[in-house]
Image 1 (cartoon, rainbow, N blue to C red):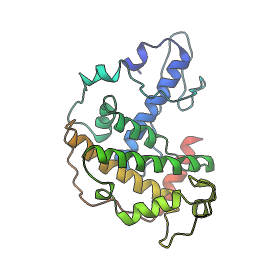
Image 2 (image 1 turned 180 degrees about the horizontal axis):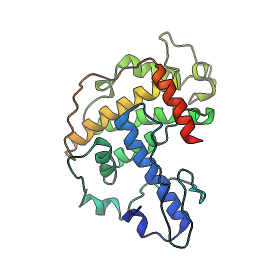
Image 3 (image 1 turned 30 degrees about the vertical axis):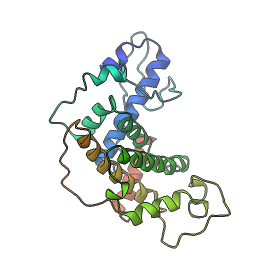
Image 4 (image 1 turned 90 degrees about the horizontal axis):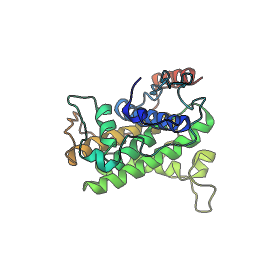
Length: 249
């Protein structure tokens, strides 16, 4: 594997950090394009470094202790002059290219790339991450003059947030601890993590398409104008979850 984003680095800890960061960005771009197929992670498992053994994927034996928030060669200002978006291209490729020059898309991809839904500790992180994605979308909508409610069914986004913020609903998975103000919502909150992932990734995709088109980075034709809505978990999604667990072992 060759990447100009890796070539200039000669410190193995920095390389591991950058590989993990690029994996996360690329994975986030894939998840946003594909929706609930969050078992298909990007992994660099054959990157060779002169004088060292092969670096494995994921957390790496050479441990990546953090995410590098701008894991590219050069600065964002330098890359603004040469965005390198090659068309035609799939949405995930376009989003990855745009992430070099736009911090909103970059944040969105990082957050989406952190989604994991099998292990209990992963679920706690993912509920919080999904809420961050919704926050990022809401902020990004303001940047292009639209509202989040233009992209997602208002009832469903409320059902999602009322679960995330309420320890009486999600227990330890909730963003907050127990609070005297906590009450069981009148409308059934979204407590199935697969359902929540599908809903928020749909939101992220709808937003990303409108955002990069509005910013005139590239025009993407979105065939569906329907708002994102919560869909009940299916047996197919359950099977995908089991497949994801098998791949992560």
